Length: 89
Image 1 (spheres, helix red, strand yellow):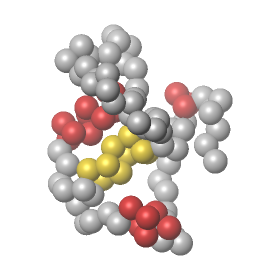
Image 2 (cartoon, rainbow, N blue to C red):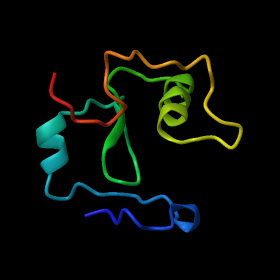
Image 3 (cartoon, helix red, strand yellow):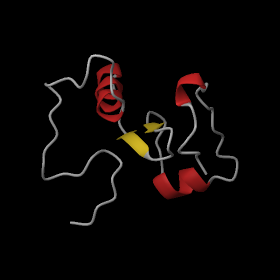
């Protein structure tokens, strides 16, 4: 379980191995799929078909606050929850 109080600025990115195959069974990633997982354990990007570097950059900008503040070009649809939120609609 991720530690919500962890100092992520001093944390090295983790390399996670799905040795039991649970993630693969649940999410069925293809060979070109990318799953970016936030420090709190939620998925912030699921790209199944050859994602680009730009796709990952947008997901990370929506997930993490940049020192200069959020990019105004990346406005969220107010009808949709925040990335990683689990709100019932």
